[in-house]
Structures are given as structure tokens and as C-alpha cells.
Length: 571
Ligand SMILES: Nc1ncnc2c1ncn2[C@@H]1O[C@H](COP(=O)(O)OP(=O)(O)OP(=O)(O)O)[C@@H](O)[C@H]1O
Image 1 (cartoon, protein in one colour):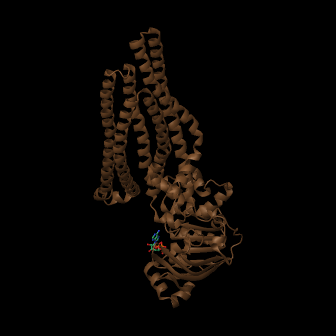
Image 2 (cartoon, helix red, strand yellow):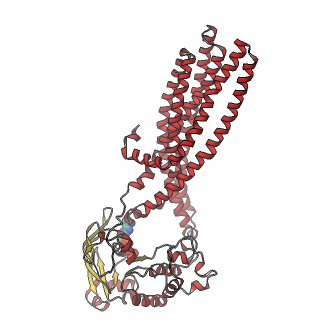
Image 3 (cartoon, helix red, strand yellow):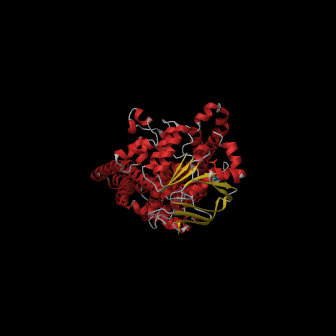
């Protein structure tokens, strides 16, 4: 059992189980009742038949027949409760709880990690891994151990009834176990491939849904065929192979059952003929035979399900073993100075920033300018630890940035990006993110961001904006995103191309107000009119600061700045 050798995974499973322990007693009680009735039925058959055959007692026959009937009826009721009530309840409870846990963990992952992963990977944890973990790891494992216990009980009973016949049963079960173990390995392997293919399909489906406007524009049929259909075909192939192997494994169970039953019947008739057993014992054995395969099958199904959910389990627990952001630290009360000392940053092995040194002081209005893709967004993400330098140091008020609590850092140094999304809720909720803010403050920031359009919407600030804010235009969305930042009154506001969708005149008005209201402002923009408003402009080239100064100074001393102004900023 390779899986159990990973002690950290074993610990994780234990933790997982501890959370749902309260379901154990009822589950075990119902399962025990069900299995006890199963043990009783063949014995009652034996009693009824032997009473009729060998003792001729009508009362005994009547009593055992009634008992047999009662046991069968209660058995179906218990099974109903077990399947539809307890198990479902357990699955739903664990699914909801684990999804919340995974999301809470995702919130603490460094942005660099989130960027390097696809949203589809996380979606498939919620949609596929968690439900499978809940049913596979929890229920299936319980099912395995429980049925194994009952198998041993029944086997002992068979040995009491007749040792020779019991040995034949045991031999057929060993055969059954060996063939099933071989197939089990194949089930796990094909399940793994099925999962991987499904994940790829999920990622692509999501991109296709999001990219529908692009595909409509460019007649996306070929794209759908090559991009989506190919991964759908791959998934369907992997699924078919997986279910075929699964089916093979089930057929193997059936085949073993018939072979085993026939051998026991033949040998039993021989023993009956020799007078070593009674008719009732033979029938009880045959009845146990049917049932013992069921217990072994359930135990093995539990084991197979458990093993086939190992990939799900690994996906699920991997999230919890990822590095997380250190959140605690000192409070940032008053921002005075941000210093970068030989700061480097790499995405995987690709260097983006290669030794940056500069300072931003309280009261500065800074613009960062560079060619597209030079690392501006990366750089500003370092200022409130959305990313961390791979080398070098960032100090705030002379203290390393890592020593501040994340909450106070991100409350005081707010980064607003052009691609920040709105959620599918009201404008008000998108601004407050469900924190309490007085109505007049909300109105105030809406005014600051020139959001007159909100009044004209059917429900004003209570208008629901649609998924990712699709019911608003780009410029409207960006202004609401900006209002979300401004209502928190940050000491340092970083704007990364935030007003690119807003017309120049409106942008100018918004910027005027922001520059008056917020003490320290850092702007990343391609618009000359915006950049000129900064008191200092930092020009980046090849991951380093090439020049610093006002617009006029840089026009004189920086050829790169002049080139950028010429090529990009003539608007
Ligand atoms: N998550 C990521 N993983 C790997 N590489 C990335 C990632 N994000 C950005 N990059 C790369 O890092 C470089 C800098 O990107 P960044 O977005 O910081 O540049 P930028 O100057 O803001 O660009 P633009 O002006 O076009 O917005 C680019 O070459 C980009 O391809």
C-alpha cells in the first residue's frame, strides 16, 4: 500500500476524519444492523428447513418463517436509511466544509503561485476532487474495514457449520481476492488518466466560455474543433477506458461468484450425500456464499474506490501543503518611506526585475514608465507584498516589508489594477466588499470617481453588475474598482493602468481629485497627460531604473523616455 507510506498524507486523512467523527456512531450502528440481519437470514433458512425436514415441527417452521420475513423487511428499511440519509448527509456536510477550507487556503497563497496556476485547477478541486474525497476516502474506507470485520465473523460461522465446506469457500475467496487486486491497480491507473484529461477539458471549457465574444467575432468553429473538441475527445477516451476497466473489475466479481457458488454446491451435495451435513446447512452455505461475495465485493469496492480517489486526495491536500503568506507582524501606522534595495524578481526562471534601487517618500506623486512587458505591474505588486522579491530588500519606514502585518500593509498601501474584477453583486457591495461604510462616504467616492452613471441605473447603487461586472462598460467598471480602493482611504494609492478605459477628460478630473486627496500616489500609465501630472517619473529598462526626473528633465536626458513618448504617448 504505497499510499499509506506517506505519513503526511496519513496525518491529513486523520485530521479529515476527526472533523466528521460525529457521524461515525449512527453510520456504524446502521451498518451493523444491516450486516447482522444478513448474518441471520441464512441461519433462519437452515432452521426453517431442518425443522421441517428432520423434526417435522410446524410451530418451529412458522416461527422461523415469520422471523425470516421480519429480518428481510427491516433489512431493506435499514439499507434505505443508510444510503439515502446518513451517507448523503455526511457527503453534503463534508463537501461544503472542505470547499470553504480550500478557498480559505487559496486566499493565503502568494500571488506568484496563483498566477502560475490555472483557475481550472482550483475549479476541479471544488467540483470533482472534494466530492470524491468525501465519498472515496471517508465512506469507502469505512466500508472496507466494516465489511472486512463482518467477513471474518461469517467465515468463523461457516467453520462452525462445516470445516471442509468452509475451506472450499475460503479457497474460492482467495482466488477472488488475487484477481481483483490485479484489476484494482488498473482501475487506479485509468482513473488517474481520466482525471488529468478532465482537468484539461475543464480549463479549456472555461476559457472558451469566457472567450465567446472573441470567437463570435472571428468565427470560432475551427478554434472550437481544435482547442475544445480535441480535449473533449481526450477526456472521453480516458473516461471510456476507465469505465471499461471498472466494468471488467465488476464482471470479474460476478464470474468469481458463480464459479465459487457452483463449486460449493457440488462439494456440498457430495457431503450431503455422504451424510456429513444437513439439507439446511447446505442451503445456509449457498445463501452465505451469495452473501459472502457481496461482503468481499463491498470491501474491495471500498478499497478500490479509496485507491482510485488517491489522485483526488492528492490534489485536495496539495493545496494545504503550499506555502502561504505570513500574515502577522507589526502595524503600519504612518507611511513615510518605501525603499527598494537591489530588488530582483523572476517568474520561474525568467528574470523581470534585475537590481532596482529607488525611494518613494510620503507625499510623492510618482509615475512609472517603461515599454510594454518591461515589468511595471510586477514592480508595483511588490509594494504591498502581493509579490515578494526573489532577491534584494524592500523597506518601509526603514523596516523590511515582511515584518508588517499583511492586513495593515494592504489597508494602507492599496494597489488597483486595470483587470481587477467586479463580483456578481450590487455596485454597493462591490465597493464595500460587505464591510460597513456610511452611505455618505459611498456617495463621496462615487463622486470622486465621476460615477454619475450609477444614478441613472435602474436600482442605483443597488444595481447588480453581472458576472465580472459584464453589465457595465470597461470605463464604468474601472471607476467602481477605483471607488472600492478610495473608500478605504489608503495612505499610498497605486494605480496600474486603472483609467485606461475612461476618456481623457474624465480621467483628468478623477486624477485631480485623487492627487489632492491621497497623500502618496504611484501611477503606471501609457497616457502622456496622466504621466505629466507626476512630480517624479521613474523610467524602467531591462529590469532596472534607467532614469528619474520630471517630464521636462527626462525629455532632455533619457533617450528611452523620448522614444516612449513618441511611440506610445502621443494621445
Ligand atoms: N504570472 C506570470 N508568470 C510568468 N511571467 C509573467 C507573469 N506575469 C507577467 N509575466 C511576464 O513578466 C514580464 C513583465 O510583465 P508585467 O505585466 O509586469 O509588465 P508591464 O510592464 O506591466 O506590461 P504592460 O505595460 O504590457 O502591462 C512580461 O514579460 C510578462 O510576460
